[in-house]
Length: 409
Image (cartoon, rainbow, N blue to C red):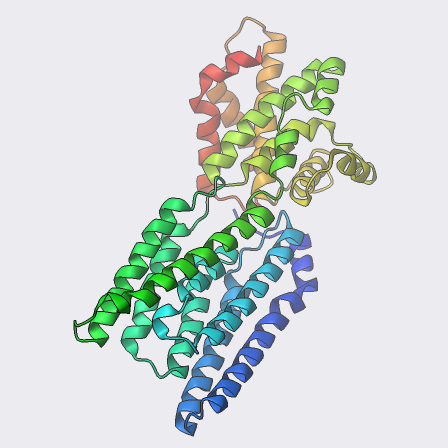
């Protein structure tokens, strides 16, 4: 299955400047700043050319990597824009920090924090590219050697491996200890190479200061990221994901059938999200409230505002509601919408079976196969982002937990 949502493409085209202008500005500003530092250091023209050419191309590569690999969310493009802006703020600040610290002894550079934070606000690959570019510029500016570059490069890559991906519980103690041990080992090895194996305790003072400073920068950077990204919707999703939510309780009192449909659909949505690596908070909330969404598109916005739905939840529910009302000619685009549709269909089929034959035991395998066969014949997922393998995983989720269906009686 393949295909992209045309509305997502349009939104991305409209924000093309957001993806193009910052990389160009970053490259020009960084190269210009480095040129000024070259003049201040009275470097020879050969050294100046070498620093500038590598800085310019390295920063362009960073910008291209951001444009190509920065995670773009089709379900929440507005949030993607905010994330992209945060990344560039962090990257510009890292560049300033790195250039300022070139005036200090190289064993005290907090460059490892740059690797971690640019990787955290972007992707691990982007963090490695951005950190390596800034590290290379610093090494060339100070006329350091290859051992200095590899000391921090290996430390930075190891730190990214330790910290990323950042889980929702945001545990940083163990990754911090591991990454700082790696930095200390690399620092000591670098000193031994530079000093030919002869060094005293006083030479370890700057590496220790570096570890402390790097730890502080990473700690506050991770806390900021957790506040703006990981925990941004935590309280809202906890309220929406509570079966005691007033809207669900009202539905329970007025329409028990729809209430059961919502509760059990949300259960499968949660499982699907975890299994396919989707945002299960978004899917679970969509499952709970999908039966309450107005059929008419013009009536939905006020309902969404009243419920305080995020942009991601709105887009999934919109696509599901449009499909159910025939507005999308039998197609589903997003994985989340496909998951919601499948969960809704299977739960509804089982509930109808129990309604007609209360004492029967439904053949879940047969119901699932029939539902997916109908999706295939109708071309429901022909333009969907979900893969054939993922559809197979969906089938398995519905058929492997047969005991759960007893709760639907």
